[in-house]
Length: 133
Image 1 (cartoon, one colour):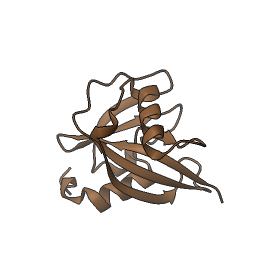
Image 2 (cartoon, one colour; image 1 turned 45 degrees about the vertical axis):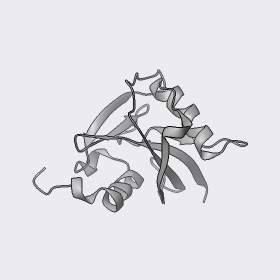
Image 3 (tube, helix red, strand yellow; image 1 turned 180 degrees about the vertical axis):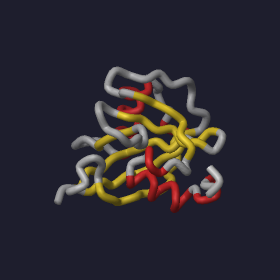
């Protein structure tokens, strides 16, 4: 079993979480991606967010949130380790060509969200999940 180690951005606005979709995947997941050899988490996060959202993050505004290990999506025979960070005042995002869709999604809509992200939501953002949604 392989483990994909990733740096990811967690951004919440009006009780919704910023998620992206790539190619034909059914589920949305956090912006960010694999940490390349020679990179630390922050360097990978800055690179990935620039590639995916056309935003240049400032290192001093990045704060560690949590690490989640869970089955990878859509490759559920392997694991993903999401090293999650929050960012102060995320500026306007612009979807790049490698992203199929980007949305702020209601955190209660588990069916739209990749498994590891649902684990993060339940662990860190339970207060935003309502049975009525």
